[in-house]
Length: 232
Image (spheres, rainbow, N blue to C red):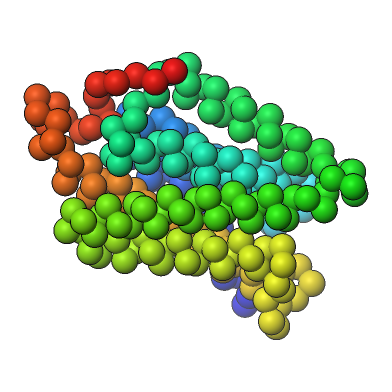
């Protein structure tokens, strides 16, 4: 039964990544859109490994997991969300560089698995980046509350706290009653990340609607569709 819930959680994560990734791309927010697709891609390969024992699937999922935990959400997604908090509109070159540098960092983290002297620094690094993301989420929740979007502010707070719990459980505190494969933990993590992707999209859209009037002639289209200011 636990395995069934794990697979269900993974399928929901894949669907959330694809559905809300497409929605972000339609807003021309490529940073969030592609990161959401990366989550779906990671979940798809994890599913292939879980169902068929495909080791390459696990390797791909492991790489993208390292990317999303270290750079995908704390850096790339934050930059994407800043479209509605700071009207930050990176250039296409900057979009590409965010991912290239993030992939390089993820590759280094995966390579560190084979170097015990370096591997010991991975858990604190992941936790540090999780805290960076937590700080932004706290700010994002405050902005939503200030805009009168109390429900989404509360949802973002839940995302922040549950995400922090998963970050701590991932490397530091085993989940009581879990099995050797950490089935309960991964099920909880997948459900948490699924909710996170959905809530952040709806929170983003809510803040986008609330802040549009501030941009005058650009208020007739989503903020993320405008290139008012480009940042290399």
